[in-house]
Length: 390
Ligand SMILES: *Cc1c(COP(=O)(O)O)cnc(C)c1O
Image 1 (tube, rainbow, N blue to C red):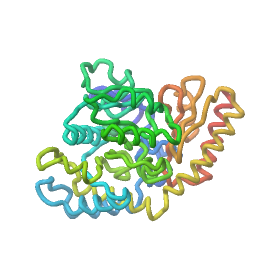
Image 2 (cartoon, rainbow, N blue to C red):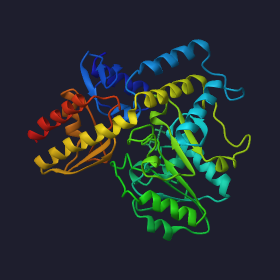
Image 3 (cartoon, rainbow, N blue to C red):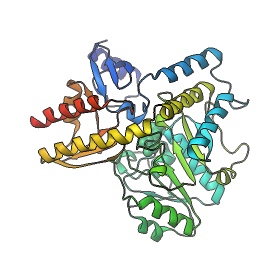
Image 4 (spheres, rainbow, N blue to C red):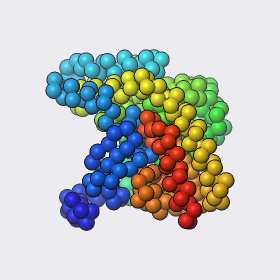
């Protein structure tokens, strides 16, 4: 199908909420994807940090097709064996958290906020400016960026926003009504904002001192992306609750809200549910994906290649005055420019490299963790050529 036709049909049949890049990807393996015209690209965005194990990882494909042939869905009215197996694996890799399964990041955050209310009997939550937590009315309320909220007010008033990175401001804003602090360990949509190394530790201490819950949104940072299975392991903290989605299913849609057992205990039968949550096929995919991350040591891979990528991008910063900053952890890397980066994204795509621009002027690199060093080098070389012509 030609691009023009796609645009016409989408206008006729779809809601029209997406501004799309002018390609349709139809095949993918590892870090390489192919469009409907047969052109190949190096994928340095991984479907928004979803394909940490790479496109169509053989283990995930086998798990999905095997499960699809047995049974795909029964609902949570019955025991679901693959769901239990995934929960046990998550318990093991998180050192003791219990899971509630849902289908997306926004749903995982909704579940977290319900658990916070049930556990504390309070509703006020401290979140951060410049954050992103999802598009439902409640998670939009938690989000700290006005551009997503315009036209959808009134939102839930129970969120107080503080500056990301400033733990003392959190201490100042806590009142007798405060139930929890809720934040991303590294802000993703906000432009890959990495806090000081001791920030999360300070926030955890403040939460403990004030007997409120410490909740992390790991929807983007989870599953090896930042060089550890979860970002809280990187920063040596232990949230009471954390949420995941994006990379959990290795490309299959699934989300989860995980909590320490004594916190999860506040949920009773009937308190929360989801028709599709933790369904056979999604949990089989997720289990296979996490096993692949462990077997292929992809956390270590993310650490090594992240260090390499940041060093190479720092090289471009030395060369080009319009590069303001390079920052990131593992393979979650941002490069802030003096100008809007969309034109760079377009030019890179034309040259066969998929990257993203977030927050207007931050180029974002989140390749599959299985990408090879030579492939990253090629992406940096393409960027160098483009920058040369700016
Ligand atoms: C993507 C994202 C969400 C929302 O996830 P959906 O699956 O799109 O609902 C929430 N929080 C963070 C940090 C995200 O990056």
